[in-house]
Image 1 (tube, rainbow, N blue to C red):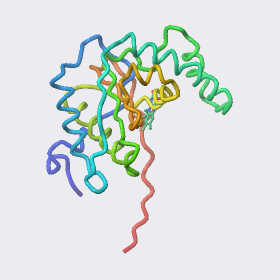
Image 2 (spheres, rainbow, N blue to C red):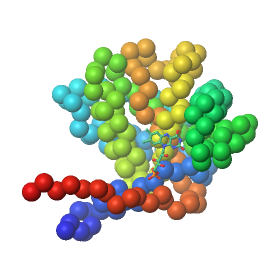
Image 3 (tube, protein in one colour):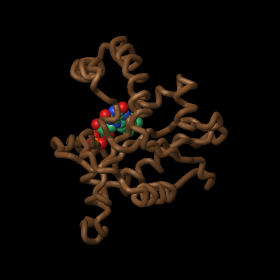
Image 4 (cartoon, helix red, strand yellow):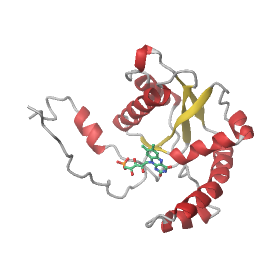
Length: 195
Ligand SMILES: Cc1cc2nc3c(=O)[nH]c(=O)nc-3n(C[C@H](O)[C@H](O)[C@H](O)COP(=O)(O)O)c2cc1C
């Protein structure tokens, strides 16, 4: 059995990290964002191609525009799927004051080069590193997958400075956590041991 002390704290960061959907108004310093991105690019990546690049968005007006664009599309998609348990989220999406970015002070888009076939996998690993590094710095994060819908809107893509040869893989928000509800638990992993 490996203990936390043997594992120099990384296990507690992994265990305690959780998606943060409630932020204080405090800005995240650029130095912290650089450190988070520097941790991201340490991720393993197929053939060492490092197909990622990053857009750091602090423009709350632009985040609001992106959120307002995505919300009705999400309402339609969720309505079509009519998934049980989504009623609360649907109601929130219909609220003009609701932001899919939960009023976080910064959005970082992890972009993957379209020409690299492993881009989505590589950028996903990068994103997880970033979220763990942020947590270790006392900074919360959330992967807001629904924000990738902005890819349907050329004006927003241009405003967000996403180059044509890259796709948005991981839209990540960061900020200092306000009081949080309990972290969702995990099921016991199903493990098959093949001796
Ligand atoms: C690919 C992906 C997309 C996600 N999209 C959203 C999203 O659009 N909005 C949101 O609030 N959370 C989103 N999440 C966060 C998950 O809801 C969250 O990770 C999950 O409920 C487990 O909770 P935890 O991260 O606190 O452990 C996303 C997570 C992943 C990995």
